[in-house]
Image 1: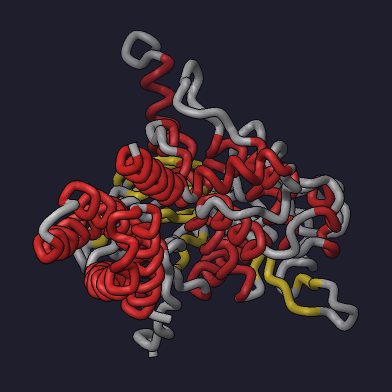
Image 2: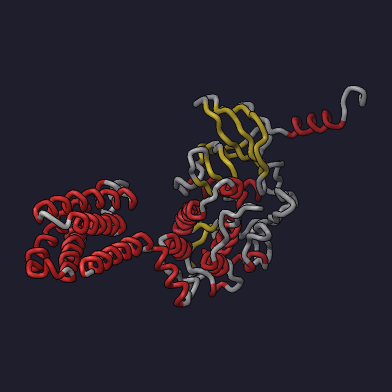
Length: 339
Length: 118
């Protein structure tokens, strides 16, 4: 046997054997795309509409049903969020082996951190970030927290569209009696043994008090402590602050720009350890970024007189230059006229 | 306030100031009132033109360039009527036109409320 099949071939066969069976559905499985928190994403061909789609399938059968419920919940969350920054869901169903799946638009593009690496303009990077904020803010307005915002979960599409992906850890909120958020769907999910972390850096488990879900480096301290009941919009704001840090970081050996102090302050405020020191809403964070882009003062940074003068000069550079030239010329004309 | 009204006001103000600076040239001081009125009128015209342009084109460099062209043409006409001071009038009038072009481009009007989604 070993003469005919080497280790690589055996591995390929093993992987082929593990591929989900889509017979009886309208989809033809094509290739592996990515591994998510609890499922695997494949590309497939939709036979009816003759188009390429992406399918997320639970990576293994789930005897408890909790993961199935979570995947379906993710599909429902996505279906609820109709926004240009969120991948639309086309379909959902169950495979012959009992695994659930959902079908979404296939997005061609790159991760946001890879995408911004080729962008040397800081304002352009910030405008990209603002579009992420817009999407997250929209989700918050629908009572949904993402809880896993990180560069790997934000894609920049072929047409420049910014898409927030992987809502598998999303939490649906509803205002509680004391103004606290309350999870209404998955708080009672039992802890199955089949939870699979997608990478070495991601920790996933069902949402119960004390359980941790998110990605280290991007998840908020309260999320890392497993305080699922105390999570609110500020949890995503923390992750957005960390994401902003990544997005404005200049490429290695690049002299294109340095991260301005004001922008660093915005990152620090967004990802402050204390909840009360963070921005109260994503729109407040976005407003500060917009203010910065417009050369206006931001709430996260108190500038001194020199910095204020500098900002004023940069903002009105052309006007200051024109007025100075006018005054200079007028003075010269008066001078020459008199002599 | 829309861009045309802003152009009108800025044009009138800058025109009046530009005309008023002629007071520093003793030779034309006796005609200062006429110069100020003429310059204000010139500023009004240039300001309205810059305001209309700013409503159509959203670009600071193009706005400044347009202001330069309008300021130049109007200042040239004024200089021809004056039969002198060509260089002074045209140069300063052009710069004032550029300032108007800049101001009308930088000024942001409140966008009309979006009803397309309904």
